[in-house]
Image (cartoon, rainbow, N blue to C red; front, side, top):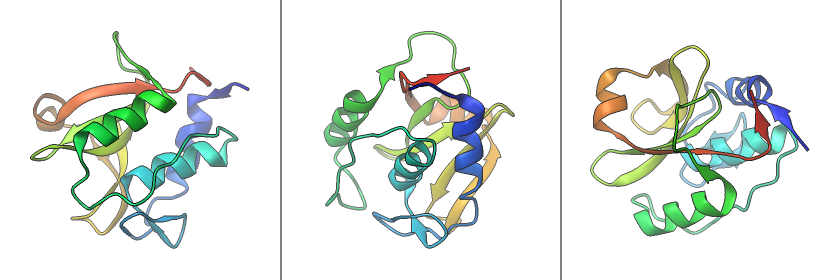
Length: 138
């Protein structure tokens, strides 16, 4: 099954303003950054292997394993609906890259799913890697 990046992003955007909730998997009720990715893909019919029981400061090895189970590492130019693996102190955060030069993610400090500019500080200071689901086309 193939879905468009636009469909994935529309699903993610439909979850904007959902409150942040650690390990949340309920759009409109509570999501964390991984929950947003899982639920947006599920909304368009893409099944991903989800992991539960992680801490607020997830072990980077667990995140990289989960990403590699569900997507392919991007080695070229980033595209809309790529999943970005970002660092704050450690690599521990996920977001969707959009077609508008923004990212969509569940951000604890904002208390909800939000969309904002993918500023240079994020692109150059926080981006660890990007991952693309094989069922997403441009």
